[in-house]
Length: 119
Ligand SMILES: [Cu+2]
Image 1 (cartoon, rainbow, N blue to C red):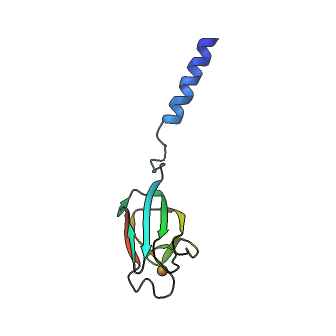
Image 2 (cartoon, rainbow, N blue to C red):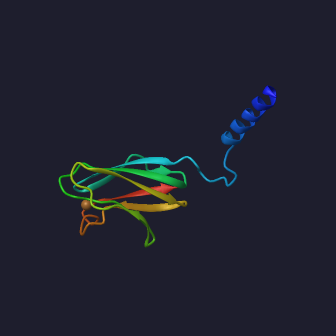
Image 3 (cartoon, protein in one colour):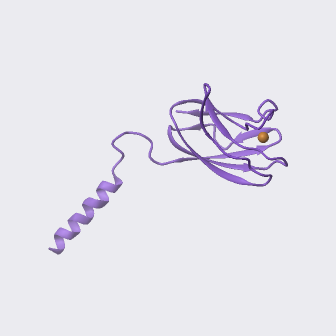
């Protein structure tokens, strides 16, 4: 009986460790995002498709936010982030090139945009 329990335990571990059947990326990818006047800098420029966690930090003196958009479709956005503040934005993205930018009026035009390539 004790041996049966041990085998069952090993099977459980094997199932948990097995890769996802879908083939999709299951481990979220963290991407740091630094904002200031007037730039958006990404900690990495490429990320595998799937769940992506953007850790956004506003190093600027003004309020900013972050939006993720591709070909006119918005995939996520945050509220205003005060100077010195930070927030996390979780998005699920397919392969493609996305604009990560501040959507407060005029800020993108001033340079607060970066491109994230999802592979
Ligand atoms: Cu801004």
